[in-house]
Amino acid sequence: MLIDEKYIKEIIETKPIRLVFSNKSSVEYEFDKVKINLKKLKDAYIYQIEKFTKKQVFHENIEIDDLAAKIQFLLGNFKQMSSISEEFNIDMRISKKGKIFFKKHEQKNKIKFVQNHNKQKNYILSEGMVVEPLIDLGVITKDGKIVNSKYDKFKQINRFVEIIDHEVKNIAQDYIGEDKKILNVLDFGCGKSYLTFILYYYLTEIKKMNVNIIGLDLKEDVINSCNQTAQKYGYDNLKFELGDINGYKYENNVYMVITLHACDTATDYALYNAIKWNAKMIFSVPCCQHEINATIKPSTLKIVSKYGLIQERISALYTDAIRANILETQGYKTQVLEFIDMSHSPKNILIRAVKANISNKKKESALEEMRAIKKEFNFEQTLYNLCKADGIIK
Image (tube, rainbow, N blue to C red; front, side, top):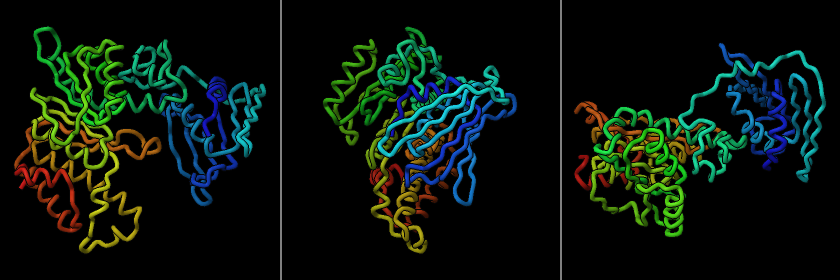
């Protein structure tokens, strides 16, 4: 159940010191009770969350700005909440039919909330920036304020930009100025392209770089809509094309390839093209890795396939490990990063690969690791097969 933002806003505006969530409504949620307390950590204030099962207590720390999203999430799993602040007590109850009972009482409490000690994270896309794609996405208002219920989305978008910024800042000067080069970027499986639009904004408006971005997708209505939106924003060097990742042809030099949530083996074809084009940077968030799960046959480690859920999750991790190793064999410094917190989305792995001076010894080691895992589990993996058939790997 999604709680009306007006209730969340009123709770946040009281600057809560302690919140308690009880009377669980979701049988799927593993915790029976949750407490949130304001704590001082070093020279900043954070919220510490205590999550209770019948036998254990789990802890999690979140920033002040993340409280609204956490309250919204917990109210989807509990029927009752109480909040204590310096001046108010709030009691909230949700009936079986979804009716909300909300009571707010003035109450002087001893614990003080020191707002000016909050540690604010310095996001690249910060509050106050009027970024049209973020407005259309409903993440910020027209005057640049972050919508309380969209803080998780705001953090996810900034995390994506931060990961790219980590690499782009090293080459930005080569693409700034009328007489400088143009950075060519291809986004495979772009979908509705909110992150593509935001990437364009970041590269052109913040970094002031000369860029040319092409988004590729199979849905004609999506492509038409994205091109119309790009024209509305005045993003002249952002174009969208209808096409399949498998076999897509591009004549210019490709510097950066992005593939976000390309489903199953579509990610493999995107990475294969990136390797063939000798792209200097690759950023990939894989999705729905079914292939290994459908073909895995362990030789000795039968425990891996004994339990369906375990096999599914291990297969997904093996898929991305193989992809990362193949990129390493092709001279990419490759990292597998946590894109966003697992509690926000299970699809939280990002593969970042940047051309570097990788030693032959390291390349051979990466290849041997793949051979060993394929020998043990006897699975099929599209990127491995494509590269092997093409002679890219032996």
